Image 1 (cartoon, helix red, strand yellow):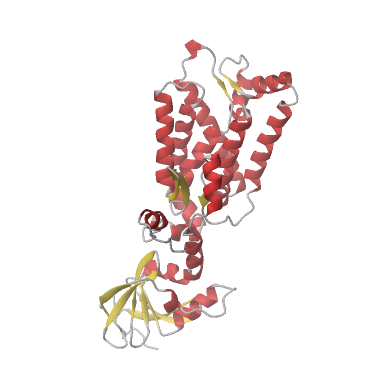
Image 2 (image 1 turned 180 degrees about the vertical axis):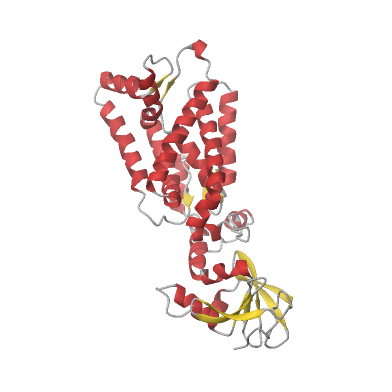
Length: 380
């Protein structure tokens, strides 16, 4: 194999030295850290990184051809062709059509080595909506989520759902028992005991006022909570959830007119709204469905939660006092802040999440919707 006498296609300097990537002998630039793979060596490196793959040919999965690049093959001294690494993953890689060598810039190496996982993930994320999801959302007005399955069992999310459900069901045995639970565990701004009132900021997150209140909150917790729990771990997730609920309740209290009476607050929606904020920052590649008249479309989380925020602001402006809008908006803002502050740590902890959040990912969520409007048969 050539040594430092080989010229880097990117730097155009003789700075390539022998190195190893996934046990494959490669040439790496001392300056830009780009890597040259000989014919077949990238495929062997990919196979080595994945225990469940025996053979791989990256050329079968290349995306669109971008055109002729301005980098010379270090073997053939011919200009290499540029391709997107995968369909909908628009990282441009340089391939020599003569010797089949491939040049990867430093930031492209990990994406190439994880390309089988990326391909599976993108195939999963670009699934089309189905008639079942349409019927579900048409009847319930609840969104359907398209995201990767978590790597861990979200038992903390399930535990919160179970506890909220148990407390509500217990309260249904009698009106007197339900009232005592709500007055003891729900938040009351006029609770005379300071220690009890502080505890109520937490316990109120597990109480709900009706079946509709409970089911709506638990459904949204189920669809976003498992992914957030997967991103940060069980106990960090619980801590973030509880702190977020407290911040949301305090926000509602801060803007509540106590001259009209005490603030009585129950529900997990403030904490769940904070999870919305974290979800928006960490899972921008996911999709949530939205009904446009009778059409079900997939939208990015930032669009869905922008609409959700707008409905909360509208409800507050119209004077609806039956919903804790400030708790929703305060929790959501807190979740966005937490998401941004923890973003680098979360992405370092979750390599696939980091790759899918890169700007080169381009998911065409409206392809099926456009096809329907144009009278074409949607491609599967």
